[in-house]
Image 1 (tube, one colour):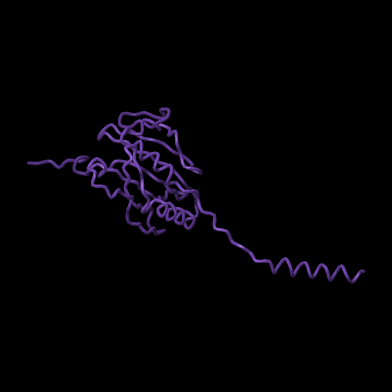
Image 2: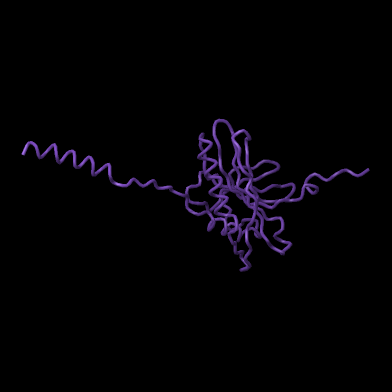
Length: 191
């Protein structure tokens, strides 16, 4: 009987070590459904998802957002007075680990690139953009996606996935905004 216990112990160690070890890559939940809800409210300046006023100064008013992606660290809506426009943004990830932040940046870009967004008027458009490859020596990377729409009302609609470094950590944000032409923001002076 005494010889049976060591034999069982050795057998159990080999059995445990022989079990396959699975490494599960846990991906983040899709942010596409939330992005689509925000996009549906784009024409209304995000009025249906705009929450309480958080901060107000002469040039901007910041609001909470009534909807936020699962796992988001912070989500807000900003109204700009001049030029008049709105931005919805969410901070999805923050870490001192560059590799982890770069992986999340790529993951969110992949979730949104080539996805189809349906707006409140039931029109659907594909969201497309080029991936800005991040580099740890650069303090930021920014991939801007836009709609493949012939609709002139949506030509300024942008979704941006951004990776930024602000000491001591890297953040990954997703933003929806209207990109006003630079010449309208800073008109050139004519002589």
